Image (cartoon, rainbow, N blue to C red; front, side, top):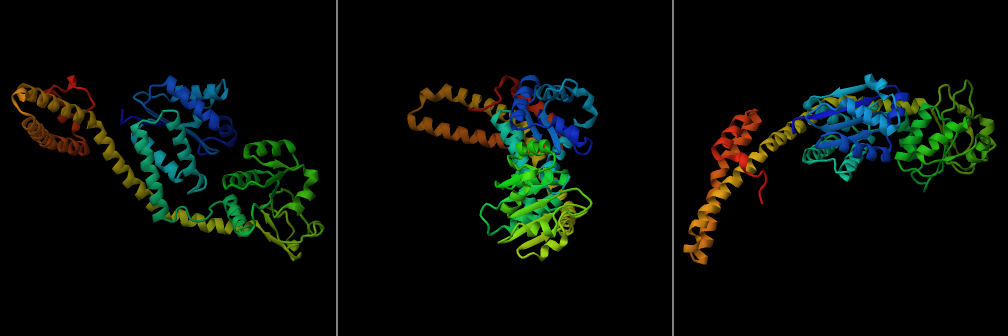
Length: 423
């Protein structure tokens, strides 16, 4: 079972946004899906990861359950004809490929934004759900903790997570710097296209609570507000929202500036008000910055910071891959040793049975002190006798030659009749 880790993945690499949205799972759906998988497939470990860019299932099983998993996903999501989307999924049935993929996903190598800082927490959350639903066995526990340790090394030893490498991340980083001295800053997001929606999601993930969103299409604003737990401001009430906001993020799509100098002047700005313009063409008139207290940041300055950070991350990729390779090698050594663990336990049980049977033959002839001494001596002898076979087994594992030695020990000590665990 230890060498049968598999994965099935639907991600931005093959599936467009509308398909990913259709199949994505929220927390409750993830937990329900874990229980469904636990009931219907014979797997010792199951992990379900679902983000805006990917929905993936990792499992440890002898059989390929990818088709069943897709069908069960359709039942969970209420999609009757989900098999029509099968071509959007990537199937990883080779153990090494699935392990490698999970490492690369967790580190952010597979993210749309290279080095995505959110993915590490999302993977931890998925692992927590697996633990809560008792779908994480010893293999998955060890694998996930190896991944978390690897992530720590990547952060400490490389520049892979430095800076904000996307426009929306860079905007959040800018907001944090601008509002460092403001308790619970008031933020208004105007326009909810792709980048505006991304900013809202990142504001939520970054812990900003005092956020209002407004959009010409009210339905779109309501859907995003529910997803991000934000307040919808009717478009016709935007002026009041502008007056109250410390930061205004604009991603309004139009040919001429939506926020003119004249409009902003009428707000009677008494303290600082920051406009972050993420639109192309610009939606905030450049001259607005001549108004006292008004500061305007356009997309060029934000993207410049994002591009610099992205380049630093890309240059760190070779070192990140080296760290992953080192971690996988160590994990594989542990996995191989786990394969012989039942044999080691059985061998210990076999020797312990022999020891106890022999002691039982003579213990009645011994006094308490003598019996205690014999117990100590025979235990010590047993530990020394078993030491070499255990070391040889572990060494054979690393060479990929354990099966022959396991068969030999089974025959010599009749290990098949022994329990696989020790007291």
